Every structure is written in C-alpha cells, then in structure tokens.
Amino acid sequence: MHFFYIDESGDTGANLGDKDQPIFVLAGLSVADKKWNNTKESLDGVLHRYFAGTVPEQFELHATELLSPNGEGPFQGHAIEKRLDLVRKLLALMDDLGHHAHFFAIEKSKMAKSKCEFEAPYDTKTPYLLAFDYLITYINWHVKENLGQSARGMLVLDEKPEHHDSIEAIIHHRRFGVPTAQKVKWIVEFSYPVDSRKNPMIQLSDLVSLCVRRFLEIELGYKNGVPEVVKQFYGERFNTIINRVKSKSIIERKGRDLDKLTAYLEAVQAKPALQWRRAYALGK
Image 1: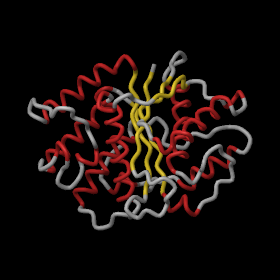
Image 2: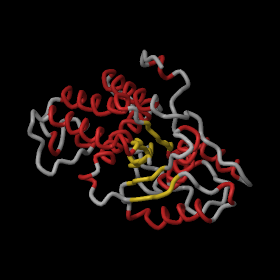
Image 3: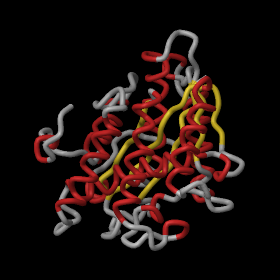
C-alpha cells in the first residue's frame, strides 16, 4: 500500500481575486507502507535535533509558522537561517528515503478568465476541487504505471469541511459515475486523519504546498521586490520537490469531452518558465 498525503496552500474558495494569495496549490508526498515507520523516525530525529532534544509538548508543524518572517508558535523568535535549514532538512527526507511528491498549482487570475467546457460534477471555478479531481487522475496513473502491478494507493487528506460534500461527490463520480475504462481502480481508499498531530506526513505535505506556492508567486511576478536570497531559497526548495514528481506534464484522461477538461487544466495551471532553473543556477 502507498499512502498519498494531500494538503493545500492559498485556499480562498471560489474567491479568485485575492491579491494576497494569487496562487492555489494542492500538494503532498507519498509514502510506501514499508517506509512509514522509518520516515516517522527520521522526521522525529530532525525535529529532536532542531529543538536540542526537547520538542515542545503537543508539537505540530505548521509551515506558515515556520516560514513567517519572525517565526510563530513554537518557532517564535528563532533565527531565520536556523528555520530555513530545518526546511531544507525536512524536504531532503524525500530524496533520502525515496519518496515521491505530487502537486497541482492554479493561477487564480487565469481561472477567473477561463471557461471550462467540460461538464464536471463540481464547481470548476473552485481551485481546490479542480486540483483534487486532477490529483486523483495523477495518483491513479502513478500507482498503475510506476509502482508495480500489485500496488494500490490510499489518499489521506486534511479535512476541509467547506469542501466535504463536493469531495465526496468527486470521489463517487470517479468511482461509479464514469464508463468502466475511466474508473479509478488503483486508489482503493480515501481517508481523513483522525488527528493531524499524529500524522506527520500531512504536516510535511503542508510544507510542500507552501513552498510550491511561494516559489510560484515569486516566479510569476506576484511578489516583486523579494530579496534575492529568499528567491533563491524557494527556487531550491521547488527544485527539490519537482525532482520527486514523476510526470511534469498533465496526465490526460481519455474519453468523451475529456480533452476539454485537459485544455482547461492547461489554461489555469500555474507553472514556471521553461528555463526557470537557469535563473536560479540549478541543475536538474
């Protein structure tokens, strides 16, 4: 079994005019069941060393607290370089332990101007729902094509009460409301964590989604005047994340009118320039 964790950053519902959060990202990492314990132990070790052996009680990693200008919550007052180094070490766990990442990013201004010609069972002008539907496609493809014939996936997502009914409708539609050839077969379960404090992979997914969002906001010109060191930091983090994504291109669903959905996904997707690595002096 492979667990696919999902969290979001920049969710403003159907409000596509939010100038403070112009990019929406739904993202996370995947962990094979056999690697879960090792990953938890490695994560605990990184945090144990960061807090000099005394991790705060009821500690929960929130990316916005960790990456706020002065640090917030358990990171309040901590030196910025120390916190940035923690981010580097946390995201490096994907490479160190062989985990994959997944994400879909939406440029809200593009979504506001674009029309979806595909009739979907949800509001295609709500970034979370469009991204969630796409990640089902991507993860189903990834399990089938890259993880072995007997592999199956389980989606674990942070609970979003405002989207709950629509999420359930999407899941039901993808399992039972489409022709047999289009049905999701390699994802066998969808779940919400009982307590995110006990599910560190959701917390890491939160960090992945925030780093992708902040990189894209800088890269696409929404955050002009950002210091070069900050730009470089997020460029490097994005490089770490995208190198763990199996397909950089949109995975297309096959079937009647689904080319219209693909066209819409391409129209609203937030992505960097083709030569973005050159601007950050990064290799592949």
